[in-house]
Image (tube, rainbow, N blue to C red):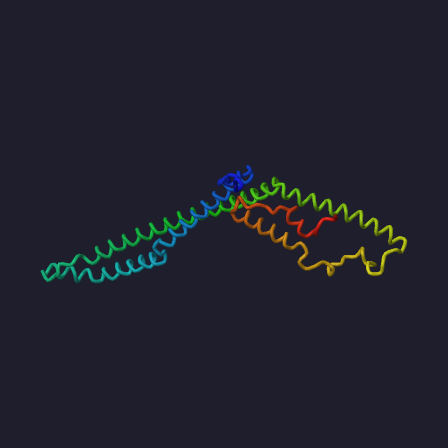
Length: 234
């Protein structure tokens, strides 16, 4: 008879309070970034301010030209020779008002969007700081970090004891020639890839936390170190 399979809970593991706060901070940052994109899109869709200024200048030039031609237009109208066109001065004056109104509206919109962009930039900086604080809180609360610190303390204590033993032997001139530099820094004797896999795993997990993955798990230190320690002594 086939073994009965254990029921699998499809739900993800519950987040710690620290990870919940980090997830909320990430969501708030993404919302602010989306708002920044909307503002940038709105600014890109605005009429060009330089073009609006040029339009006002062109309308002012048209006013000056219309004053020169207005006398001829009035004379033609009095003589009944007019073509039914409108007063060129009034047409130019209306165009100038429209251009000035368009310029003022465009300028006000630019100012409002610039102000909004500055507010969002300030909010994003605050929310990025909240994420850094959230990542720090997650790390402080995760037992994986404590296990690394405890293992380092254990290794340093063991290293201190071994150095004291070798120091006592050295005082009696008992260190073999091949180990005569035991008390010196010897980075050339450390394999280039020694334990770097674990560092890479941690760097990857920390990067995921910092870039918005509130559920990124920290590596299990005791599991990954076991592979490097070799088989246990019989």
